[in-house]
Image: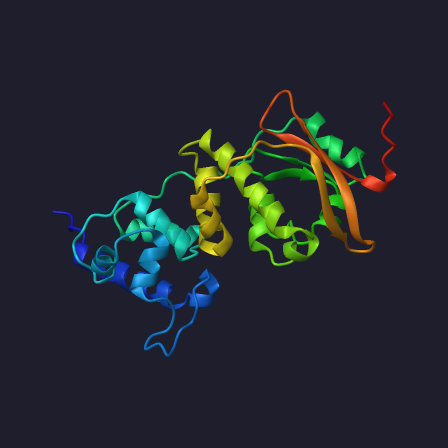
Length: 273
């Protein structure tokens, strides 16, 4: 007979894995105050459970290796809170008795013509964003205006992730809080149209895990449509610049938008009535 899997060993491994990942995450990394001396490093079980939105008793049972069944949704919430990378997340799911769900790694389809437009608009910053604010293509001027927007080769840059999780964004976006609030409200509007789409759920989980502002603002349920407008940005060479930006929605993919930034001082005067 083939050997039966040792479920008790798997639970022990799951317990050790969760504990090790919890202990490596400092309270200040997730927006919690460090109060007094701590007997153990990292987050307390109660703090982790609170951030992940689960019962502290239930999480304690899980980390103690008790024989309980846990849903994949809860595991994904724990993975996001613990800031696990995709390999660690897959390991967590395997230890808990789940096979990892298929990852959506490919970018949204982008026509060759639409992909060429930002390059033609140089030296004006321009990019094409998808429905979840993935930056599908951009020109060099946009990369200079938004430093560290592109940081990883294995996934596309994302404008919401940059705004909330990249520290330099708070210097570039002069009016960071109102800009960030509006961006989060627009993401919420789009995410409601894609309930259960992992491209959105993973992004929202990552934002909640990494940004205290998102954890505070997301439950307020603000919604907002995409629009054109003006924003003040700190250019790396010119300093503060008042930009007018316009979003053009693509005919083939209406949730994709070409966004172009123009120095408002260079715009022609509006005609007088």
